Amino acid sequence: MKILDGKKIFSDIKSELKKEVSNLKKNNLKSPHLAAVLIGNNPASLTYVNAKVRACKEIGFGSTVITLPQEISQTDLLKEIDELNNSKKIDGIIVQLPIPSHIDENTVIHRISYKKDVDGFHPINLGRMVLGLPCFLPATPFGIITLIEKYNIQTLGQKCLVIGRSNIVGTPISILMSRNKNFGNCTVTLAHSKTKNLKSLSLDSDIIIVAIGSPHFLKKEMVKKSAVVIDVGIHRIPSELKRSGFELIGDVHTDVSDLASYMTPVPGGVGPMTIASLLKNTLYSAKKVIY
Image (cartoon, rainbow, N blue to C red; front, side, top):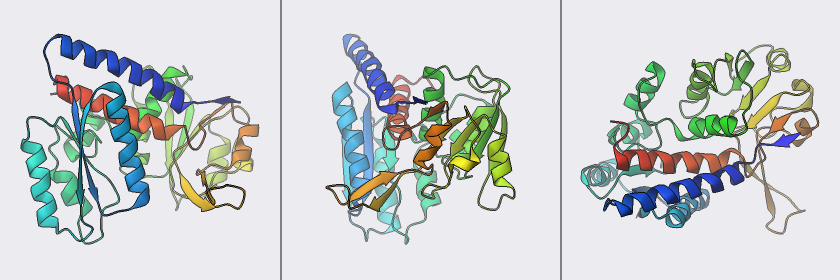
């Protein structure tokens, strides 16, 4: 079994982006700038935002973190987003999810300018993706496609099973894997929690992408020999074996590695590739290559 090493590919992409920033500066152009909006003090959200800020610093991007109280009103949050939309300094905007329950997530996503929506969640970007038009691809699916491309995994004519139908991962990656592109052209099945005979579907699949949000959901008896398995899930569970008192696991059981030809680790697989995609989208925004 070969590891699809997202950390290594992310490191390579950061080197490429660093060169891009250097070229921009040589031409007297400003460095790309990412703004992250963080609401409340969710430890996981803070960790994710800090990782993005660190990556920006490493490659020479500017970054701004707007930290807002948990009880902020939707109206005040939308005002903050409007300011970022109108700022010539800012190229990319993300609002770290999840957000408090009293704020409507769709309203927030729609309010971010689609020209600065580097997470790729805005309906205009998703609609353009479906039509095959230039857009900011959703960051995690973009990262998965990049990982497949970097490891030159055969996709032409392969049976691909996507487990999980979210608008952020499952639905868009199912569309991208079926697209008539070098690293697409799969016959795709989009499965979910209501799917019948899921085991028979997974046993018949050459590529399995799991983004259902359930720890160790995909088990060894559901995977055929030499399948490619991509695990999007990440869960923090208690562990007496770890000094921290917890460990991170995915949606795929570790024993699947006995059968898989390629498999993403958790952590260090899809997660770093999501940040890589976010940075690439921010660069595209700064260079105005999408619109």
